Image (cartoon, rainbow, N blue to C red; front, side, top):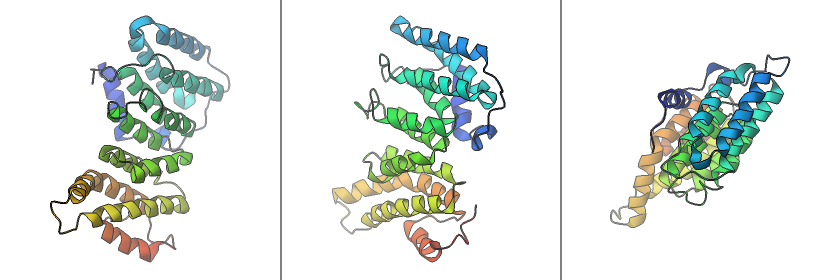
Length: 267
């Protein structure tokens, strides 16, 4: 991946480690009127995206950073316009996998802009450029999944569950499973659904690793998959339930005792 400006690299790190406090629960805007500065920034953003040979990308990244800083108090209509503008990053001429900085900036920012960004992230995941050459863009696809989780948009839970349990790429399964941990504050029924769906796939994968046919390609593949997902999925299951276990069998034993009651789930 190409290098990024230090400020933006710091933004990505801080957003992925922990969403800003205001993003933990989407705060209502405190602005009573629209900010004319936002309109000017969005106009400049559009011009930066239109520059030839992507020469405006650094300027566009700086504007995204500014919009993200202003987001907590931004007027609802300015928020809507900002989301539309950032979505356009993915609609123009496509960058190459070696120059992902603008895509990274947009995806990370969207993840911190609340539930309204979730549908945008789900939409761009399978569209060009990420969808037509998924292996070339696997790091970006992981980032999209993590940001979709951070958006706290419960409408994207099915999307994340599908990628976690039906995906063929171990890194994608791990990232989607990790993203689902962001719904630890959701209602009991929502958390229960996530846990039950993850456990079905987790148990199947772990069970396939216990065959005595050590040279069986499927066993080898399943062991690799288990190695990739075990830690992130265990962390997610812990966040959703308040429990600590290390194997699917332990999780199943606990889940079967507590699936019909909130008691013991924590949260």
